[in-house]
Length: 297
Image (cartoon, rainbow, N blue to C red):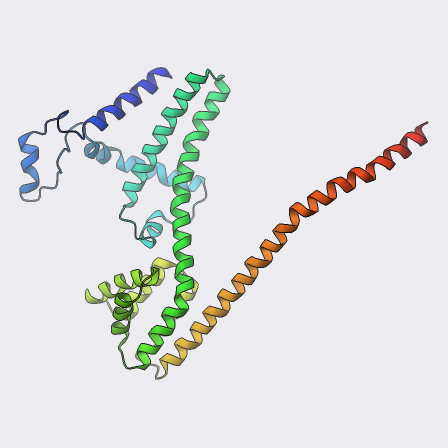
């Protein structure tokens, strides 16, 4: 166990020092490689560097990360969640980072077990629980950010829908309305509409770009709004239809708020009931035990 911890520490220190120029001098061929035709090797990507090490463990990290995600019953793909929150990190990069944190947790748990002189069963439990907890924490961060993005989109959509309806009624085209809202407004929807307008400039149709946004966001109200906007070239009173959809979104949000309030009201009564029930049972138990002692005597 001590040998494994020492090996992990040695590899970590080597990779850390490889980022400093005074520790590892990069050969001139490696430094000139990015300027050749098709050269992609970055500065410092030698034999013992973070870049080369990441390229070696990237496929294994992705496979291990996906298997552990299935163990925690994570149904949605990591790529969809990273794309939804506009993360610059790729799936492979996130898995490599995740596996790195898991390896660090394993090393820290081994050193902790040796320092505290834990029993074999306790040390084994620490080595198992610490990496799994680290993996779950990083996965939970992405899942929380994804759900928060979906909630913000659902909250902003009624206003965005009404603005699109007003611009369309005023004579704007659908692509022009989306471009104006992406430039003149802020929020999560505006950031997503920047991508939508970019996809339209790349040659994608307005409806296909909006459906792509709906698939990425995975919000029911957005799917319904895109279904209404898809009638842009067919319906004559699209502004009225969008207004009706915006009112339906507000009613749905109102129902969700009422539901959340009711759930919190029910949660408040749980400690009150427990605090009332336990003393009541104790008070009822005193005469009951006394009666049993009388009958037994």
